[in-house]
Image (cartoon, rainbow, N blue to C red; front, side, top):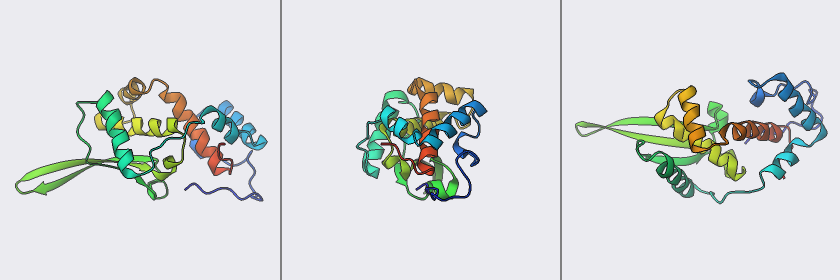
Length: 181
């Protein structure tokens, strides 16, 4: 879980660094700060993304990810495990991970692929769960965050870049104690 900033915090919204928006232009960060200061960022995102999802447990998440994979990446390597991870954000400073685990099985080497999604997405809007799933699925084919990776992301989800920005705004609003809705 992302901790909320206490109301009487010595650092105000205007001086606190926006860690989820660090790579974005100063003008966009200024807009986000203004919306945060006015208490409008969370409600704005809640209005833009009102649809919750029904993917509540690991079994449902596995089926959800498999359906996306089958629709857009049929020839990609099979997935062994997909699950929500409650410690992911705290431990690895990540919202999702993809791993490949190789094990010796008899005289052969057996590879298994896993996708772990931060548990913050269990309660996030449906569009954000889709975005992080697309991101992790794209890593099955493209390991680096390069041009080919982002082309694959936009092939699967045409609005990927806008969803990524809005997800970063969502996380910023949650951290500031302004959850959507």
